[in-house]
Length: 605
Ligand code: M6R
Image 1 (tube, rainbow, N blue to C red):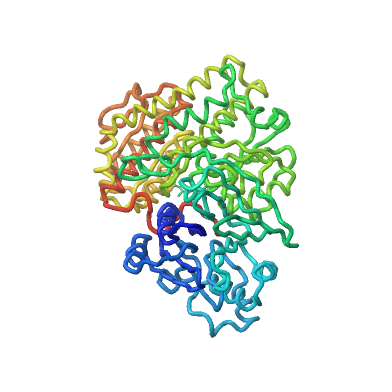
Image 2: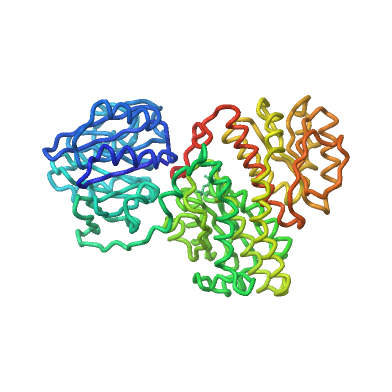
């Protein structure tokens, strides 16, 4: 959470920082600010509650000629949304921006007597005071000392007023990437702000001090020895982080799904069968595993729920899915026979990272399914499979979910071949169907008229219910989350058979019920649950396979899925549910890409 950018170079820092903050805004959009340090050491600070556009207006009314500076877009944790709580924070010689949480900021305030110096309610300002207190002319020494005192997670970019042209950075857990290009040196909380600046970048290592100047970036370990950065190449292009003619990133990302699905599946098929050995993942990892644990948060966790349903059915192995924020404080039942699969789009979600670390401590071998290359979860996991979704900018995850599913299906197939629950022929049929999912998604996207009709039944509701059985229940969870987070309609997913045990009391005239009935074996059972809610006045939106027969009085609106095999209905169904949420949010005039109170990557607890 919180977007960070720093620049030192030959161009106007104000423009570069504002442009970069716009790219990073999806990480937090409560307030934004920049600090510029000119060649004479004069500091210019501008910070505003609200979106980056508010800051831009203020900055453009008072342009500053400086070639070095730092910028921040905030997702509030400590202290409300206000100008004074916005970053950067200054104290004496120090001006800094921060992503993370300083857990011992009360203790530091008391121990060093900072209470009278503080103007904001933030933990970050306490860190600025600490650095100023420790500073006696040597930034490196100050940062090493501060790192010993600060407890929590942080990525700091710091200006020392008597060191014009330089930005100093340290981090612990919270991410920072850096790049040096023709126009100067850049640091940011994630790659999207750097894509347009350089193809080559590196992840700033923890326990180092990084110094950016116009001509170079230097890294030093705690003893002051120079450290060589491990350079990576950006494989996303500039267009992939822009809207490309769509009104919102979310709609663009929904429409990218057929392509990114193919990009994620095809390179892993050899003779029609999945194989991960070229990616450094040995078969022995799968052969030895006796049970599987999946750890993730939010949408990634719901992808895991679908993975569990598929894996248990095909592999006959026990699979458990845990919410990472719960798991990390649990006493887990894992050992070396457990394969732990960690799923994360950003690769930086703090709870998922902590859960991964705990799983490793338990002796389980870990495999991460991650979208962002070089991210912390990718680096700390024993093995990693990258999803090839490209940058996902909308806060609501769509294409990342789809490719997470694709990887889980591929993994299931590889495990099934090795554990001999699939023949090679069955494996080939499975991957053919999986690949065909991209065309079933395309068909949903090409004709979304029925979804738009459904929006009319949903958009004025205060509550909505998603119901389904088996696999349908697993992906209805994601449908409900999507609707909640961008349309602010209270939505819950229920196993259809569970309704009668309480929830059906909430159904009244016009309550939208989105019923997923895509599984042949339990189709009749789900339909009879649908009748129960219909009889109590629900407005039923039925999502079923195109050929499935139902009486027309069972539903108000029916959305047909162009797919035949039960196991693959999740792909077109997910596209339907995403569009339903998208069009509902848009019809309500809400900020689809940046819903209230949220941020794209959750790097604080
Ligand atoms: O980056 P991650 O996949 O680890 O993020 C996990 C969740 O924070 C994320 O899926 C969140 O639930 C999205 N807002 C869902 O659209």
